[in-house]
Image 1 (tube, rainbow, N blue to C red):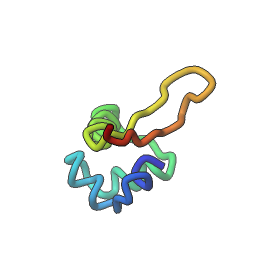
Image 2 (image 1 turned 90 degrees about the horizontal axis):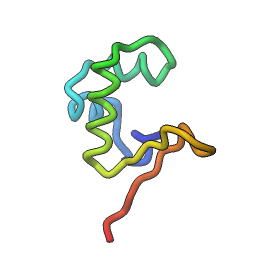
Image 3 (image 1 turned 45 degrees about the vertical axis):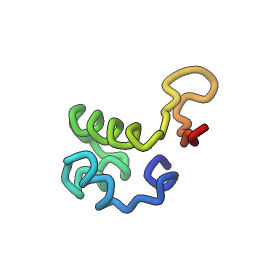
Amino acid sequence: MARAALKWSINDLQEAAGVGRMTVARFEGGKSVNDESVHAMRKALEKKRVRFVDDGDLAGAVVRMTAG
């Protein structure tokens, strides 16, 4: 969802996060990925103004913040 909000390919995310392409694919497929890789992907997306909702009624949601 976050990658789609940016219109990024798997390659775009893997390059921005410094992780392997298969790591992104495994994560998106619900498979186990190490915490460092998840953190790197999240930080790469957050640099592009994607925000994650960690708790509350909207937990799991992704929001792309716009400038202004």
